[in-house]
Image (cartoon, rainbow, N blue to C red):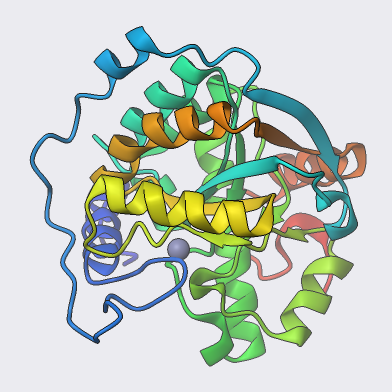
Length: 295
Ligand SMILES: [Zn+2]
């Protein structure tokens, strides 16, 4: 890889990242449905078409409080509070649609980005931040960390943070020290390491399963049913799938109608200090002690 230009590398990474995601690199499960059938993520018809929905809906009051998160303990939600999270992006033509829906509803989300995707599409990373959303990370190439050595897992985590940080450098924004395990495949040892480094693991309470080949309405109904069962929680979605932006206006309308509030997660003061130390001193380095965390 040392012999290709940066632009070419970005192209290659883009292909690798998109290829990996297209073959089932979702946060939670491999690309099979409940019956084990292979799923595909080909573009679906009618990817846009969410804007007309908003003319007949009033989303005032849907936006809830902001929660400052320094540790997992701060992620406690009250009754009828939900957090919106979107994993695996950014992806051109997909992430923007999600942003549009969120803007129209006046709510903020947390995007857990993959490093390779951020390297390939840095302008979208900055756009997400510019619109006031929180950006965490999701490894460099969406590896299953439970299957890797400790060193390789750490390289995946650090690579993701470095890549997303690098995309944000030209902006005033920073990456939050929020992390989600790909496939939700965590280990106790990695959780301990992340906590020691001041990185907060964002788990998921409600899996929309928007990576299944469902219709947007099926995704919405499934998600609302799980929210109703729990009464609150962190909702896992993926901005790389067209059906997610398609169902999101109706999901938000359902939440509003049932009295839910969308809580915004923001990094705490200590986290900001940590992130600023990352972006200034280590983004341009390739050492494995990136970000000055120590080992
Ligand atoms: Zn994922």
